[in-house]
Length: 135
Image (tube, rainbow, N blue to C red):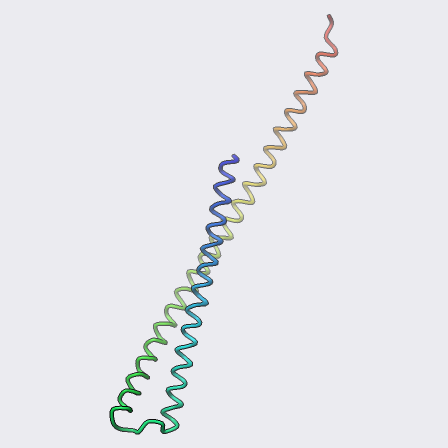
């Protein structure tokens, strides 16, 4: 029973670490997505301020960069949604593992208490039987 409890506790710690890691990755993807959106807004404002002429190689490069940023934003949004789903799944698994470890801990303590009570009863009965024996 003790070995099973130890295994469940290790599983619980692992699931919590996986959840923490998925949250960290989610934050990383969110920061990347925010950075891309900021770059996109800066590029749009630069185009709106007539920083680039409407024709020529600079306008073509700005247009390509803007399309590239939009595609990266879409990819980052999809990655964020996928990572958010994985984070929720890891969180659910961590809660299940925590519940299983806690239930095993309760069973282990109850078994240990029953065993110690049984040993106490046996010792008491042995002590009483030796006192009441006739020589």
